[in-house]
Length: 338
Image 1 (cartoon, helix red, strand yellow):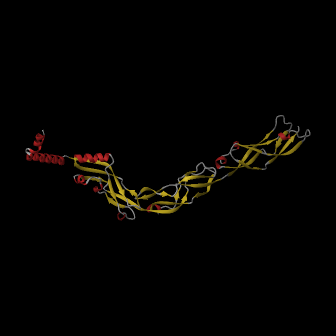
Image 2 (image 1 turned 90 degrees about the vertical axis):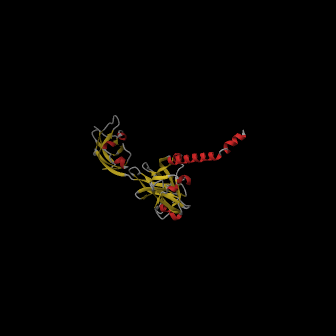
Image 3 (image 1 turned 180 degrees about the vertical axis):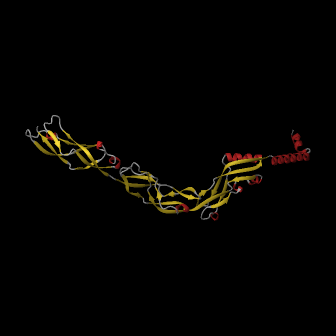
C-alpha cells in the first residue's frame, strides 16, 4: 500500500510536475482574464491628526469608488465594504497642517488593502478626488458665561437683570474656534411664561457654529463644568387707563324708606394693570355703585331732604386695580322722605 502511494508521486514525476505547472498557468491566465468592475459607494475616509490637534472640518467623509480587477478580489472588496471594513486612512503630520483649510487629493494608496492585492487592482474613478481639511491646535481659554433666553416674557413683564455663578469657565478646544468666541453661552432658557424672578441650574453649550466657504460648521469644545446657576429678575410693567362714562348705580336694600338721588350718574374710573388686562377694558367690565343700606335707619322728617356723603364702590371683571375715581371717590346722596 505504501509503495503504491509512493509511486503516485515518484513515477513519471517530470510529467506530473509539467501537468501541475500547466494547470497553474491556466488558472493564473483565467484568473487574470476574468476581471470585474465594481462600484463601491460611501467608502469612509479617516483623517488622523497628531496629538494636540483636532480636525474641525472635512468636506467629504465618504468617497464613491470605481474599481476593476480579478473577480475574487472585487468580491472581497465588496464584502469588506458591506462590513464597513474597507476605508481610506491617512495620518497627517504637523507639517501637513497649515494655519487654515487645506486641499488634499484622496490617494488610492490610503485604502487598507494588502499591497499585493492593491497592485492587481485598478482604481478607475473616485468622487470626490479632492477633499478640504481644516485642523487646528487644541488650546485652553477662560471665558465669561452669557445666559441666553428663548422668547420674551408675557406682555407687561420684562427681564431687568440677570447674573451667573460662576461667571467665568475654562474651555478647551481648537484654537481656530476658541479665537472666534467671546463667551460661553447657556442652553437657551425659555422665558415666555416668566412672571416672577427665578433662579435655576442651566447647562452650558459645548458647540460653536461658524461659516466656512459658505457652509455652516459646528465644532464641539470641552467646558470645565457642565452647568451654572442663572438668577433672573423679572419686573412687571403696569399700564394705567382712564375709563370714562361708567354708570353709577344706587344699591338700595329691600323696603328702603326714602327716595334717593345722586348728583353724578356717571363717573371716570382710573385703572392699573397689565396691558393684556386693561388695554381693551370697557364699561361692561366695571360695576360702580353706592351702598345705601347703612342709611335706612336715618331719621328724616316727612317732606324734607337730607344730603349724605357716601363712598363709591367698584367691582371689576378684570385683573386690575382701581387707583382713582373722578370727580371724587365720594358722592352726595340726597334722601327725601316723601
